[in-house]
Image (cartoon, rainbow over all chains, first blue to last red; front, top):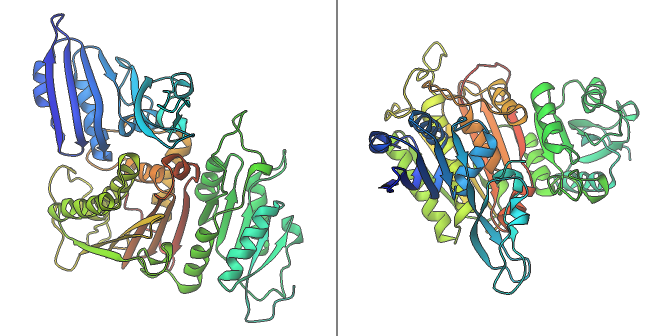
Length: 146
Length: 345
């Protein structure tokens, strides 16, 4: 089940937080109703997206009236954005991805936001509490543009 | 080694030591002896018994074309199932072989997607194809394209769970079951997402894409996938799944037998060539299969035309998410008899 929360900032930007699973039941009608200008979408909580969800999300983003910024996109979303680079069209900017990292020294795991750009998993890798630099738990090309 | 008449054997074209060793080991364990040659022209054409498979290693020398190697090897063995393995540029070479040649089995070498400095794996850093994958593939070739579910892909004794699905509600219940199963094993994050995604896309295909009218045409081609669906009483879809601690497998079988290799390869070409933006149309654009390919470590299609389609996704969940992704995706296609119908996925 997907949860959608909305908040308007003083400059008129609509901040939308989507969490849960995006599938064929994804219904963003309430967001489309409120979106008059720029939309910033927080997608770190999207745990899963199905192929029908991808289609529904694509139609949703294209139906928004102005520029869209995606922030903290989850691995589920990031993997679709890398697989289908033009998924969200030219008015959409993907700012950051919240990806899984592991520590090669002690095995600790954490999620960490990095810029959605090639090499960001290395350049912006988090440090573990043990002091080691953490590594992306996945192939970079699965989650980040190459 | 000479193999007598009635003995089962396989022919292998490879110049890669670890591949030769792994193939001999896996096929030997399955009761199949392997005759290896470095070049197709050196393959023995007789005296090697009942040949059940031809394996071609696509890691060729610079200037050589993998496709030429395949067709030269094929010339000597026109009728046996053809398998390909690769480590260098593995995804592209294996998809080329699967989509553009009559190769029905592609298996990446271990280490193929581990990109060292420079971006391209070198032969010396590669192991051969996964032994367990090869063993299971050859056993299924020997046993025939029936519906064994997930058992060939799990360690013996792993409990197998089964859910019957005839409607959208059943599909949601089946997904809840497999997610709970994964969670009960401690799967979280990307590992759990991969399992859920594979199960969901296989079920959606069986419910919406597989059903056929009496004339063989796709029954739901125009149906909006957001609309709930219910199959007939004699059209039950079965989802079977299990895990042995390292490997999780989920198989979805439908009674339509409508999936063809062409339908699969038409979609898998998008992995290689890039996916166009999804259309807003109601019929699937093949994204489900592409997504399943991207999360599975093996995809096995077994089709008995007009009678049964079983698609199995095998996912490694024992190590890290990265380790699973580095294994790449093997694809196997078993068809009970000829008769291509364009449908499914």
